[in-house]
Length: 152
Length: 80
Image (tube, rainbow over all chains, first blue to last red):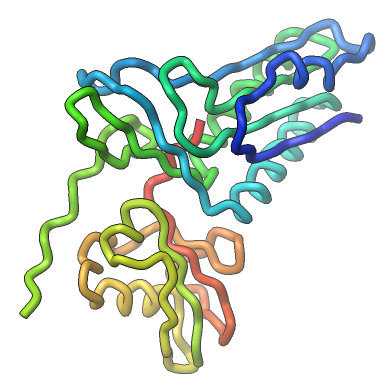
């Protein structure tokens, strides 16, 4: 049994995560890497700043891993999500799932990323080539800026 | 009673703070917490029914809050 999740503030080492789940009981290992893409919603992206409700994000990520282990019978899971400023091509999340069989390994990996997108309290602000920055939601759409307040 | 509201990302920016102490009536729910925050300067940036977590667990709008609770108003999540 090897299940580990972490919210980190450094580059994610995919090789290290792969080594964690190594077990000859498994016939399949699926690695998912989410990375910063150069274009979103038609705009040129230069990087993404990730922030979180840290304490809850750690708990929620651990809960997702535990649900995944129960649902798919995976005993070997390693997941890290990174916070801070990430440049293009840098990995924001790496999910490594090992299972005796490939179908369950793929399903388990998909389950984790979809649950992360749905409920992990992590927020991102994209920076664009024109120098502007905007908060973005899980569907990839920039949030409208709050209307200016009128104060007397 | 007093509770602590935590704000993040775009919500913290809109209200100019990531932490607000609120005084509430004794039978208050999550809904009242959100309403008080929305009445603050910049609070209009919060939706009527945002995602809310009470003491690190997602909560419904009708959940009662008690003194000392940590109530987080969570913007659209964007992990992954």
